[in-house]
Length: 150
Image 1 (spheres, rainbow, N blue to C red):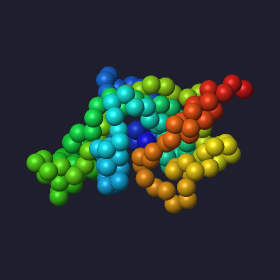
Image 2 (image 1 turned 135 degrees about the vertical axis):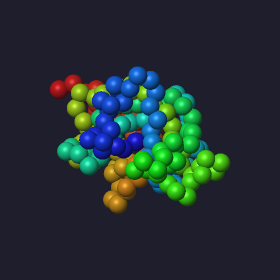
Image 3 (image 1 turned 30 degrees about the vertical axis):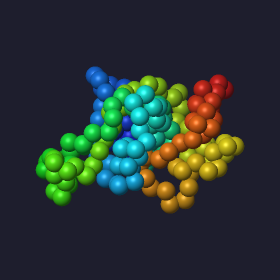
């Protein structure tokens, strides 16, 4: 799950008093991931985008099923969608909680050098989704890289 750290960072997730709503995603593929694939208890990587370095900064836990994203109904929100109605919301958002911040961001450049991550969605050219699936094998490889000492 990607966010620009100057907008919402892994530290912001850690500072929340309870589960935070992952708001503002306005892409139907991402909405469908939230609706169809996210389950309470799943873990997700927090990925810094548009940062130096861009990469995986830590782990969050999905703590709530996808629900209507309240920002779509708020005309003062940058995520307001005038075509979305409370009786038929277009956009969903899960709740997340902080699990772990890595000692060092695993950069995109680093990930490209790690065997076994060649097919990872986030490394594909032109991939711009803010939420992408990660295989169990990719998860294990990144977690090992994050906890590698030295």
